[in-house]
Amino acid sequence: MIASFSIQASLSDAASWRARARAAEDAGFACLSIADHPGSTAAPFVALAAAAAVTARIRLAPAVVNAGLWEPLTLAREIATLDVVSDGRATLGIGAGHTPGEWHHVGAARPSPGARIERVGVVIDAVRRLLAGERVTVDRSGVHLRGAQLEPPWVRPGIPVTVGGNAVALVQLATACADRVELTGLGRTLPDGHAHEPLWDDTNVDRRMRIATSARLDVGVLVQTLQLTDDRQGAAAAYRDRLAEVLDTQALPPVGDLLATPFVLVGTCAEIAAQLQAWRRRWGLAHFTIREESFDDGARLIQHLRRNPPA
Image (cartoon, rainbow, N blue to C red):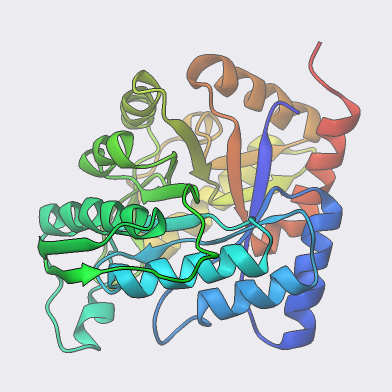
């Protein structure tokens, strides 16, 4: 296929979570992921281990853990255990964190963007070394390890690492320490601590894509909306209006520009397939994560792409 698709889902109860995992695998999604926001989402590694028990092929990833709130030894143990119980299907998704409340709830102030991004690199390096069986000592960026080591013989090195985010500095960091960067297209965090300023114009997207591809880093995107429709322009305009209301701003790209960004997939299967092919030619972009509410449309799109490979 010209692109692979992952699904980011959430857990509400055991039965529906298991059903979602099986359905995602059957539909052809490449990866099942779950967000990690302490206090507002389920524990990601427990949920993913449960998904591993009812699937056989789909990859499993937290998307993404906040490097500022995880210690490398604990994180390495969690991802190594998930990799074992899933027979090698784990991927570590990690980011710099953005929600001030996540630090506030543990009695800490959110560090500066630069400090948060620096810690991502330190945590990834420590986790990779721990997974490789090294004895690790670190004392920087708030990470403190003293001869730490993962001793179980089943720990496997080489678990893929995906850095999620959109800051230019984070993309640059990912080129040095990750297997993939997943762009969100989201800029500064707005006053509510959760919503973001979209950065979907071509200049911003192209700059980040080129940083990644020039370093031969695999690149993906977190799709903010996927809608299969015969009225591409109308659906995109309606989405733009809803987004403007949620963000309380009119400073959004016009509909034509919105339809040109890989963070918005709207149209018929054929129209979206043409866009996917264009982005692959331009940037090598071939990985898309969609949100749970777009599951059915995502499954239909995957089937279309399988039945209609590019000429």
